[in-house]
Image 1 (cartoon, rainbow, N blue to C red):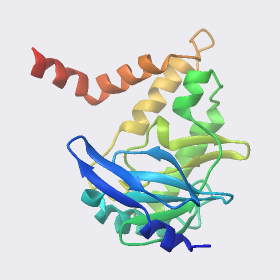
Image 2 (image 1 turned 90 degrees about the horizontal axis):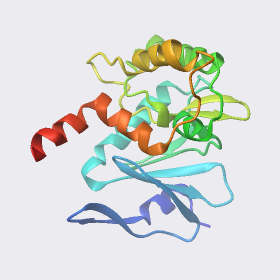
Image 3 (image 1 turned 180 degrees about the horizontal axis):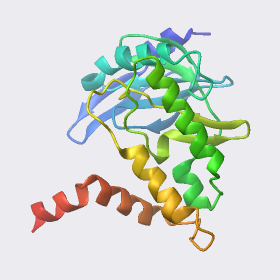
Image 4 (image 1 turned 30 degrees about the vertical axis):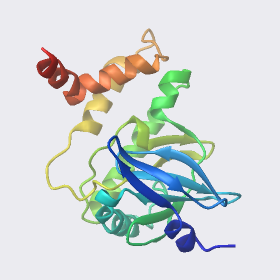
Length: 206
C-alpha cells in the first residue's frame, strides 16, 4: 500500500489546448471531482481525499495547506492530514453542498447560516480574511454543517459574497412562499450574472 504522499506523487497531469487533464493515477484512488485549480481523488476505503493542483497552480498547495493548519482547532472546517509541494490530503466529507440542496429541494435552515457565520468569525480570530464563500463549498452532513476550500482566506480585499448570500436567504429563501427547489441551469445563470461573466460574454459576442 502506498502512502498518501506516494499516491499524490503518482498522479500524472498533462496540459492540453483545453487546459489540464489527468493522464494516469494509482488504482487506490477514485477521481471524484475537478475544480478551478485542482483535481480531487478519494483514497479508496478511507475518509481521505487528495487534492492535486494543476502545475500552473501548484503554489496554492502551500498557501491552502498553511491556512488549514491555522483552522485545525475549528470543527466546521475540513480536517487536513498533510500537504506537499502540489497536493493536499484532507478529510472526505459525505454530504450535500448548498448548491445541491437547492437542486434537490433539501431545506436549508437558519442553523446552517449561523454555523457558517460562527466559522467565519473563528477564521478571523486567527488572522484570516474569509473570502470566496459560495454554495459549492458549504456542505450539509448528517452531523452538521462543514466548510471546504479555504484557499482564498488570505485575500486582503474585502469579499461580500457570503453577506450577499445571507441577504438572499433572509429576503427571499426564508419566506414561506419562496420556492426551495431550482434547476441547475437556473442556479448557474444566477451565479454567472452575479460574477459578471455573463455580461462580459455578451459584450464580447455582441
